[in-house]
Image 1 (tube, one colour):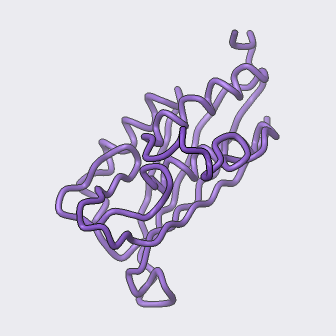
Image 2: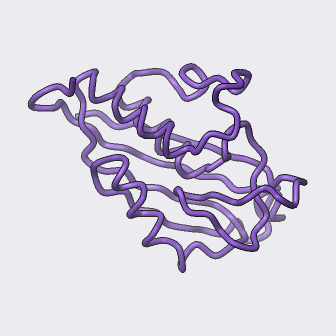
Length: 161
């Protein structure tokens, strides 16, 4: 068994038409995050945790932000590729746990949908929890959103093809 820690942070975008996507769920009437892809900090942190656990590098190594092929891509697609990569390396996911730090929007009404979408792509339970920064720092001032994720993987009985 191996464990990996993932982290991602993005500031809010100045583009009023940019959608907010967290855990694969689009939030209506919420400011989007700035980034090369859809800037889904939860999905990025999950992917980083999985890559780290499997000693497979990081998202920037596999999906560089200066490559136009990844511009505005849905982060769940990237996560699916990461899951296949670690499967090909002989690993399977046991579970992933995420802690999201944000002032707004509220995640509770969307938690189940986020967990279901992430779990479907990962192939194992993914949990999502939210915390506030209580006004401390840039995240506490509502300038962006951050997420930490921890993933547990184990050797697959039969490596993926």
